[in-house]
Image (tube, rainbow, N blue to C red; front, top):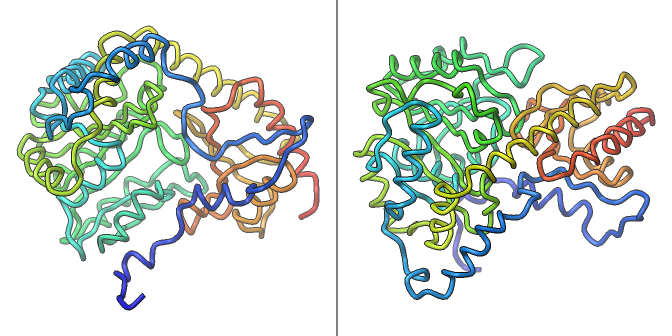
Length: 394
C-alpha cells in the first residue's frame, strides 16, 4: 500500500485469544484426552429458555431492528438502576446510566472522555489486556500499580499514591479481577475510592463479574455515598450474567454530565448497543432473578471444584487466587517463560490456558485459567493433566 499507518496502532501486539487459539488450529483430539478450553471467559451455558422464547417473539418486530436511544432503552436503564440499588443499597438514577455495546466499549469511551494522548491511567499489574491495548492505541500511558510481594492477586494500593502525578486521570480496579480472579475486600475498594477523591482523579471500578459473587454482603458501599458520582465510574456487563456475548451489552454508571459527553461520542462514531441485546438484558433484569441466582450457584460450584482439584499435594502448580470466572496459577517450571509453558500444555496435555505474560511483562511465572465455561466434573481431569506436566522435565 502507498499510505502509512498510525504507529500507535501498529505497535499494539496481536490479540492474545487469537494467538492462543492458533496453537491448536488444525488439530484433532482423541476421545480419551479431549481438548479442555480454559482460555476465554465466554459463558459455557445457554441463555435461559424463557429469554430465548422472548427473543423469538420479538425478533421479527420492525421496532427491534431500529437503533435504540443513544443512552440506551429506558426499561434497561431503569432496570439496572433498580438492580444496583437493591444490591448495593444505593440511590442510582436512570440519568446516571449509559448502555454500551459491551463493557469493553464502556471502558474505551470513558478512557477517551478522561484522557488524551500523553496523559496517564493507573492500572494494576497484571492487567486486562484489552484495556491496555486501547490505551496504547490512543497514546495514553499506562502506569502499572505493582502487586504485593509474591502475590499478583493483591495490588499494592499503598504504592498507588506515589504513582499519581499531574498527568494522571484515573485509577482502574477490576473486581472480581481479570485475570487473577481476586475479589478485593470492601475496605480496599473504599480506600482506592477515597484516594482518587483526594487526588481529584476518576476511580474506574469494573465489576463485570459481580453477579458471580455471593449476593450478600454487597461488594462495597460506594453507591451509598451521597457524592459517589464525583469520583466513581462504574462498569458492568450483561453479557456474562445472561449469556449474551453475541449481543454485547454493557453499561457505565457515572455523573450525568459525563454521561452526556460520552453520549455525544457514541452518536458520532460508536452508535448504541444493539436494541435486541438491550431488550434481552431488560427482560433478564425484570424476569430472571431466579435463573441468574442459579447461574451464580453453578459458577460457585465450579469454583469449589477448582479449589478442591487444585489442592493436590503433587500438583506442582500453585493456585494463587480464584473467583468470578478465573483462577490464577503459578507454574512449577522456573526459568521457563509462561508462553512456553502454556504452549506445551496445549500441545502435550490438550489444555488451552493463557500465559500470564499476556497480562503483563512481570507475569512470566503465572497462567490464567478461565474455569467458568467448563463443567465442574472436568476439574479433577484438568488437575491430573497439570500434575503430569509438572512431573515431566521441560
